[in-house]
Length: 191
Ligand SMILES: CC(C)(COP(=O)(O)OP(=O)(O)OC[C@H]1O[C@@H](n2cnc3c(N)ncnc32)[C@H](O)[C@@H]1OP(=O)(O)O)[C@@H](O)C(=O)NCCC(=O)NCCS
Image 1 (cartoon, rainbow, N blue to C red):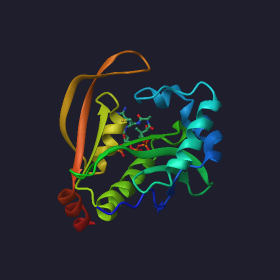
Image 2: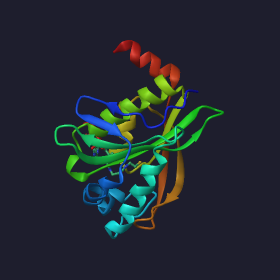
Image 3: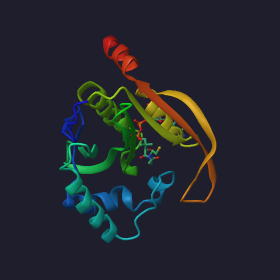
């Protein structure tokens, strides 16, 4: 493993870079305060920007660690921060990483998270050396499952009533998807 931390990644339309404390206004108005974005997430929407400011100040510090993988998704055309993609959990011994993401509602449906996730998978497998990238989503969160599918993450199973949503208290089924290094290499060979 070659721990590199949240290196800046660039795609056709996006820059992925570490969060800065000064991103708080855009993060809060873009997605952290929006209940439509946080509906399926493991954290509740921020009721005030003060929480967002505290969190982003902590993230700016965390970004100095080479074992942290957490990026702000920046729309290149305007420089605005529009989302978040990260590795909340990883097992260095088994060489797997779990990814999670969210995007401002105004930017949904344009292939943006697919573009960001592909860049992150390329980095985590191709540069850092993970052997498996996994992610979970509520089965009813079809858009998120589709993003993973488009990035080559295969459905491995469903945890029936595996999670109680913070937003509604409802129990939902959770799908687990993953891509292995050899599957990623096969996709790269076709590109
Ligand atoms: C999930 C999320 C990240 C998707 O980001 P995005 O940039 O809009 O995703 P993309 O445009 O790359 O791809 C979405 C795909 O889902 C499809 N889709 C979206 N809603 C759908 C629906 N209700 N039924 C079927 N397909 C749907 C889109 O058509 C697209 O597939 P396509 O390219 O084959 O047409 C974004 O909606 C989001 O931030 N949601 C809130 C946070 C969240 O749920 N995070 C994930 C938690 S697991």
